[in-house]
Length: 235
Image (cartoon, helix red, strand yellow):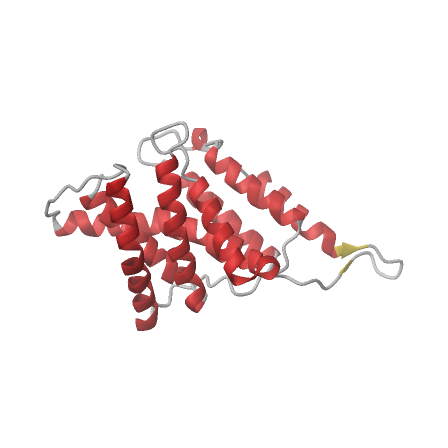
């Protein structure tokens, strides 16, 4: 756990360092937002450690299952805010009325797809109930902190952000959403294509929320709303 971020940081920094005869080392200028194969290796390493649950033995106690994701989110922040220094990530939690409006708009746009297609594919069923205020508040807080923020940081703040310099806004949005969908393949089956499809569609609207103001907060709010509505009223 101590060596993992050091190795990844070294991989990101290495191509920017050139030896010189006059000085021991010189860090050369480079475009911080342009992705390279090194970014691909780093992001794949982060995703593999999470998906393969390689850090689960570090927190073997009940209730601590989200700590590997939070650890990897911290590593990603260090690598891409401090070491890589990419612009436009939007890692800020300063709220504004516009941020909430954008998040609500994208949730409303996704709801017909998520609910209608989910019911048609028999992936979800409606469970009418009235959760207690405490239960609903806990669901919002836990989903926001442990699911929405880490995933939006990785997929929108870093991945979609980097891909925009290569593929443009639309290409980056589509590819990031597809990868986001594929990251959900393991939900209850060897390959749950229904979940992959719905997650990929949701990723389109999360990506739209992020790029509207380039704020992770906006897409995280949309993501939270989708997951909480699903967990409380659809299963």
